[in-house]
Length: 383
Image (tube, rainbow, N blue to C red; front, side, top):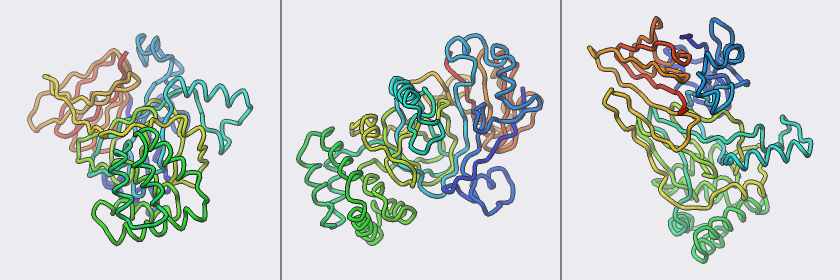
């Protein structure tokens, strides 16, 4: 079992206080957006034996277990993060596995460098993800019913939004959402910037259900993603609640601190709220134009005290233990690799004392007994 030394990524949208507050450290004044736990080549965790990527590369079956290697190859198939949003992230979708493999192969054939700003597919993997709130956590997830989206837009009283309102009323669900999103993303930039400015002023004036979009517009003035965001469900998670983001589901995180886990991929197609490349035709190919409830997840308790966030994929499995004062120790030994992350209290994992924000990597089959008082998240795979 190795204690992890993890990199904090200073993305501009990050909170300056949330991660330092959890870790009990002084803020630096700079944004601290994500703390990465895993073997991703962009920022692998460090251990006393080298980076976690190096440790796994040296002995994949020993570290990951035979079943995980057989199913996912000689790599850790998930990346665990602390995510602290102080401003809205980009509005985005992720491809499914077939789309990622096809897109990656196509861009490789065309000779587009992996680090090119207009490259869509950095790898050939899908990127399902799950975020679990540690504080109140605001996000956008999936399309609203088109008629509800039409009412929201119509309520702003902005004349240039009327064509979108009419489209949302005039077509079947999938066609309505597709046509309106296409129209928003392909509109004349100057005209759209004017529309967004008018809509932002109306959102600020009306408040209530419009308040999140006023804040989005404050951070992204003139961005067409502000209008696109109003097509989506706004969700406010309470601590312990989670969202699963599958392939093709448009989403954005707005504010709050959470634990995020995802398949080990960088494949993102952006819809807005970003200065980065937006490939509209490819985006429209990937987006699933289906309205529905965002599906807030609450953990399901097992007899041994583990609370599991059930998801339909195998690259990761996230659960937590809320350990009461005076409780008994739990044996968490598995035949698959694990990362254990403390988010509250004081927890002992083997010989390691964990405080909030600290974590350990547990190789497959390694004895993993935990005790103490606090909250411990467990990340592993289904193999």
